[in-house]
Length: 269
Image (cartoon, rainbow, N blue to C red; front, side, top):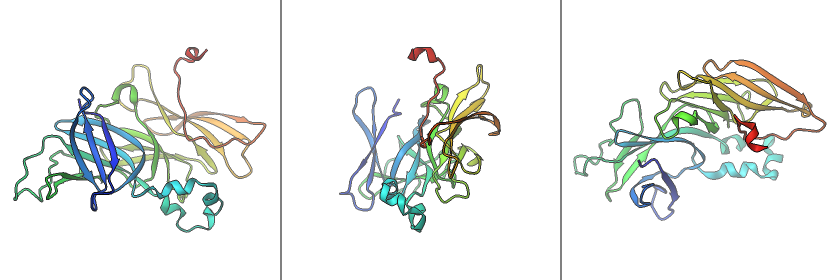
């Protein structure tokens, strides 16, 4: 299995400044490498092998300027900065890496090396014999802190992931998103002035399909309602609310991006 990879920045490569290395988990040896146009990311959604390809889904940004958005001085002026939301603009993208491509020929220089169905990702030989990979956008929504049904689909072909919106200029930026990577469609949940954390999928006991379960997210509120926290429960298939618990707190609750579900609490006692 070659379901492990690294992304390295190589400023010395003209135009194509991201190198993706595929490394054998058994030997630690470099198996193959690919070139891509420069990009930045914080989170990988998922990665797996199918046929003679590695599929990598990434929450992708064109550059690391979104890191500048997180400095206090930048956030103080973000309401007056017309470029703030553009700096944060990312989209989920899919790379397809061909592990056994056809040999390079003069006729095949412009041929797409990817022959998988249901993908618009591309891969081409460069004049130096290396392979340039070009991703396809999965959906036109900013997605961050992605989660999947890890217990049964980690390193395997999958269909769904769950995320929070990274589009800070959206009508409601506090949105939870479910993405179908096969149909390239999405479902969303949001509530005015409410900001959920990373959505966590919890499978139903004896689940029958990949999204048979619930999605959990902690909630905080903004404006004059900062002494307020909650836990949201969504039906993972329909993305409708099943229930919630809300609490009034003695002080303001800071926004938390991440969360975890512990099926056996006693292990921490």
